[in-house]
Image (cartoon, rainbow, N blue to C red):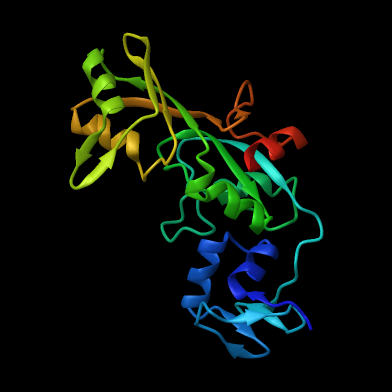
Length: 234
């Protein structure tokens, strides 16, 4: 008997997108199995079928890739952008021919560490909340900020019904802070600082778990080491 897997898992193993993004591709009617458009997420496949995305047959990636990119400000973390803004994944195309997609996101105005892969299983494990992977950020504010902002972020802040809480928050200088998050809700740091009327000049993610940005230049990338891959998987 041939083992079957969910269609979105197969798409992720083909390097098309993360499992979550692959679910959207299915729901949007862009995936077919043996000529039939599939829009139900419960569909399972063995891999023996002819599976196509936008009419083009796809296959599991032979070589797995695990990449750290120092995303420049102004780039979006998406496979495509309707506003025609520059896409972070495009910075990898000169080196890699595989379809690579980002694990998690980093908003357009922010820069720094973001991971790319074509390994759906790896992406799913790293993205899952149970992994509790720390994300560290350095924030430069326009003006000097009061210490109480950090204290409140550490205790937790509820904004428009959403609870935000930093794992750690410390001052580096009069207008620079270091914030560590675990869950990292959408635009969390920006929303919390805006709530306290603190304007951000620059926001950079400098670490994801055991993976440090270090001196990697903006716009450049490097493969993860085997130790970093094992560290992210816990």
